[in-house]
Image 1 (cartoon, rainbow, N blue to C red):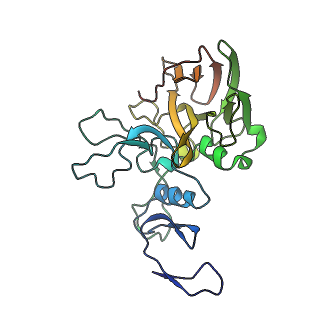
Image 2 (cartoon, rainbow, N blue to C red):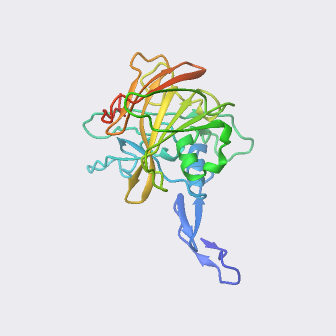
Image 3 (cartoon, helix red, strand yellow):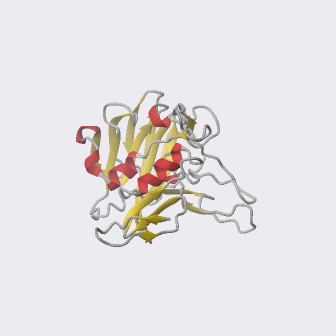
Length: 276
């Protein structure tokens, strides 16, 4: 495709486009085939343009672009069931002998008049508050974000969180001692309910993307700091413990409308439990 040169006064450029994100003249660019792309795909790719990166977490098949061949690719990229920047799989593992699990936080929204494809109205979920805060912390109202140090062993803290698409405090940020400028080691806690772009979250089923308290952390990768899904406590669950290995342990209570959360650091060493 011939496109204008982003540098004024320079000749046009011929660029081969694939659906997704790339750079043109060192500028971030999103390419979205309107006819076949749903709203989840579009918002994911457009999200790369201002700088949002893929989230990580559960081992999944999102990076396996040839699922029909014998080479099964499994990895943590695209591993958060609660972040649109994981939309290649949302943590779903569906290839190979197993184990397998499914996360599908999308829903079918209202149709758009004159849209070229009637089947392109799948949308959701929201971008996680963790990914939003890591990239653009100034975009969040300070009154809606609670900052605290990671609790010391044996310490107990309490916080009330509201759902992402509602008013009130929507994000708890726990900062480790000596946190670097990159944010690596930080822990994010948010509550996700079935509202707004989270209407696709499950409530009582086996899907991993369910209403409840969600925990991400910031981890260093070869490509830089990335948001990493660490687990969730679904609304009404009997099991209310969640631990991040070597860092943090907590107990939570979740309801269908809001959460009353207790943060308890019981030991500096814990179990990581991202899977059901």
